Length: 271
Image 1 (tube, helix red, strand yellow):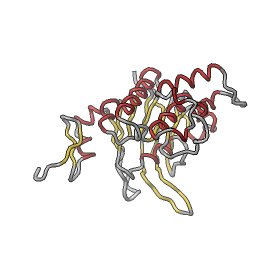
Image 2 (cartoon, rainbow, N blue to C red):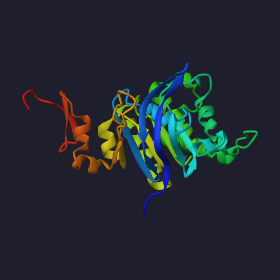
Image 3 (cartoon, rainbow, N blue to C red):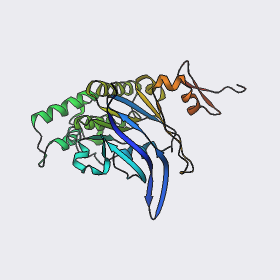
Image 4 (cartoon, rainbow, N blue to C red):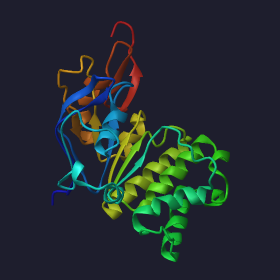
């Protein structure tokens, strides 16, 4: 049975506008994100991964083309309804240092608490479960400003878990985490996708972890001139290793992708 499509784009052009100027980052994107899968978005710095994620969740408007969320145009969703469909964790620092970790995670219940935002016991149970899931329940009463970078990242992931959205978008969610926490976070996201049917899309530079735990990979090439469409390469990790796509995507004068070890290794002089 084919998985349900959570997000679909048609000839999407992403970028920025301001002061009468328009900067195209990547044109002509036709993508599908599926429920029940973890999809890892990989690419070099400047390829537009963060721009793509922000466009898919409505934080940036498309320059051209369309984004569909569960079959409906993104622009048809009122903000409150969209918050109930998509949870987002970005890399930018937010001004949340003056509230407790518990209160930060509680903000994730906003789409479910009605006009007055009153938390019921069920909401508190979901908040506690989210804190337990990411491993910071013991930090619940600490101020966000007192957390390490890794702990802060976990707190924002917990907020998205408390939001109980069918679609989760994360921009480098494991960037500040140690090796153990990185794997634990990816295992948690994989469980949410496989057991709860969520669509999880995350950008990452961690190729090793993506190959181990992602169901699908999106390889986003840079588009230097901003006009020539360069398709995002989509496929399973095994498929992209076998057909040489990973080798072509990551290979350069100094590095090559070894399909046997499934790692990037230095290119030896003379090879």
